[in-house]
Length: 563
Image (cartoon, helix red, strand yellow):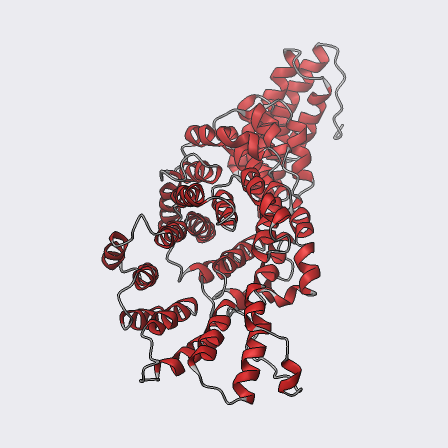
């Protein structure tokens, strides 16, 4: 986690205006036991200022309280004062305490130097282990990893946190469970929140809630971390409104969401991106998810370039980052017709979908579907999408992709059903959606519905492409009436011999179907009207004459507007 931009809760502690006698009855230990670090800091700073106290005990307590109050910069400053003492009170362990503070400030190289200056203890090894992870020093990480003790609870908890940060959530869960079994749930009750967080990361939201509820009901119903985790579970299980409702406890406690960056961030997510451009940019360096959610916001608003720029400096390490990298590269590749980007997107999706930890998860299978989608292997796409269909039935994006894959595999009836389940008006207005739906209508014997889709479109290049699709697909399946209508409009927009040939063939098809009794006789009059649009064509005149002669011989009345 990064804390450079984190709001300091008590970075400037106001000193009481009263005299020393007014502090009678207040005790630092009482504040600390209640985890009221702001109160403890206020009392200690008062003592320090009024008595001009520089004794080590006061400073050590003050540094401890600043650290636990998340004011790590202040803690570092106090530890620097303590480390300047070169007398009998000098304690080299303060190098380690300073290193821990620097670590939480994101100053990893400085944290490493400070830790190396401290005594060789288990704490030193744990700090250096985490610093090595942050600095990507894998050989160092393995060295410190091997020095962890299975007998030390602190070492095992350190290992669990490392596994969590390396997205090995199952391994972290096993370590936490082992500690709980060895020491009892009452002694390490807060670990239940850590286990719940692991299950949340594993997408077991119901299990996460079951583990979290006892802690919230019996131990700390206003725990910021636990309540926020519960809200996130409700968001995943239900919707943003449900998630926001769970935050009411802490919102009432804070008075304003602006007092906590985590709550501000999550409210943007719960409210579907509301105020994203105002809230998320300042949090990009504080909360890793803020950058990812800002990328998602830009993608949803079709600002692909901004999403791409924002994600460029990110070296993916988590499945979510790999997935976003894949999505952004796929979007950019399609928008710019860049084959290299599409290839890169396919590789990102494959890395996630084929990984042991993600292959059986819903996102993992969706990634494999996306990989095969880009490779145009739609039979394989359907295998993976069918496996997650029960969990995504109401998801418009899922139904959109599922419908296209089914249509590409010529499963037109099923494809039509899937595409009609898409309720998002933005998706329903896209040409890709309309063209695939039109093809499904035609292949399912509903050419009129496809023609209605064209009539609702604005006159532009996309509607021209729709006409070409309707003309050719209807011709292919023998729906010659709508094929002729489409070719007629195409010919008038672009007098090309190709479109005239198509219209001739379609009109002959109409005539053939009327003769066979497979089309209404009225269509013969419509075919004649379409041919009459080609005034100076001897072929058109000949075809009209043949049709009228046949109609006359068979006692069928046709309408010819030129008579």
